[in-house]
Image 1 (cartoon, helix red, strand yellow):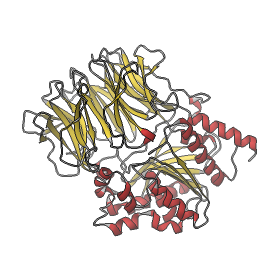
Image 2 (cartoon, rainbow, N blue to C red):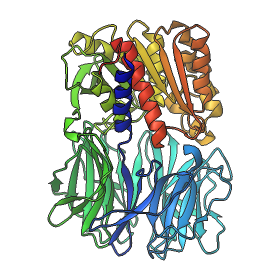
Image 3 (cartoon, rainbow, N blue to C red):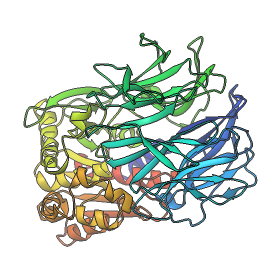
Image 4 (cartoon, rainbow, N blue to C red):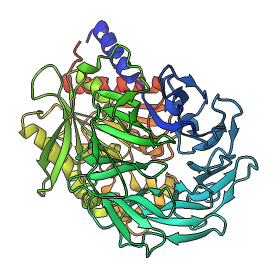
Length: 609
């Protein structure tokens, strides 16, 4: 490839990686402004803007990457969750809406801290933390004037604060028994007594729990009595019987929001990976009003204080993630934020098409296919595996996908067994020893693409991040003849070292999903790609964040050392200011350039103009 062609490709990739996004909308108490997170300046920070539109104002310029923001009910403060270097050591600050008077509420800078919510007077804030015990996330509250956190639970496990009563005396908390199974508790903050609300036969999940407007009931997303998650309601004044309020046979409830007066609920249905937004009265079970959306994915629903509007995040394969405002009465949508996409014609981007195929044992699988606008099948193709493992591939905006497509490389992103969004049974099909079948799904996916004429042998690549990185290395080792190149993004490769070095609370909830290192060591060794890297033939690119405490950098170092010892083509990029994923703009550009160039080199032979 000529230097001119290389420069043109690099510039094209950089423009795609610079496409911004916005998330975490939070209304001011008067409903006239929104706080949110944007990477407009290259790093995720807090911004605010009028709901009438206009240019946003910057609130923070932290050295840390910001993940979440919540406006206090009295309007005086913004609670901000951020992490130094992108690690899991999130800390909590409060700042004024103009960015002044920053004050850190979590003092050590090392512990993991997750925002809960404000009390109605704006004086108290709840959060989960492992500051006292790295093995567990417990509940804390803090009076922002007094400044000393008060620990409310000591039950162990991973506890997440779901909702807080208006007077701050009761919390809805979710405690994760293991990945895929959880319980809800009603916590009395004064007496520190817990009441179990979700007695059940595992596995079952209870997510997105919310008090009803009168606080006499609880709503939650649950699959307790169904395969597909649905909206359920529990009366706190009865015998704790959960009632299904709204369910869909062919879709799972992804999330919901309730208006302050309780007369309106907004429900997001996950239908084979795409979302549908429904508005209804939670007091009855009648079909609601479906809102037509400009993108395939909607999330982060927030009602305005008066219930007249709904802030939400929208994205799609050709739509960068931005915040929109839905007027409830009219059903009209207004785009509030406009993330920059300089030099990118969104209409020229590629849509995703859902395809179905069969696994080796006949199980039905699906995946999203992105075909380049130019050329014809069979295309050089990259298989992209999502993280989790209980994640889901959906048609969201992916700058790396679109950058590959612009170079004539197709992408196929499957939802193999163990993926979420397809029911409780499907998500548990890869637990423990069942993971061998999930690895076989890699080969079934590749052979489907080849047999259908969409791809051809010798020009298949594989990539993935986090657990997707595990699947990448598992695929390269188990099926060395299938893949011409691989890219491992912050993936785990050795279950034993993962359990030893990851966050202790993460390790404790992962034993059912992966296998217990104390009793199933042999299984974990057999499932770990690190012990089969002598079979890998494909050139492999490894990218990792130095501050990653979810999948520690030791996982990447093991891969690089093992493959280099065999003189395979290996490249390794370590980002010193990132954790689990790449969020700073300069790092996104570096990662995207490396990834696309790697696949162009080994799948195309030379990079096209």
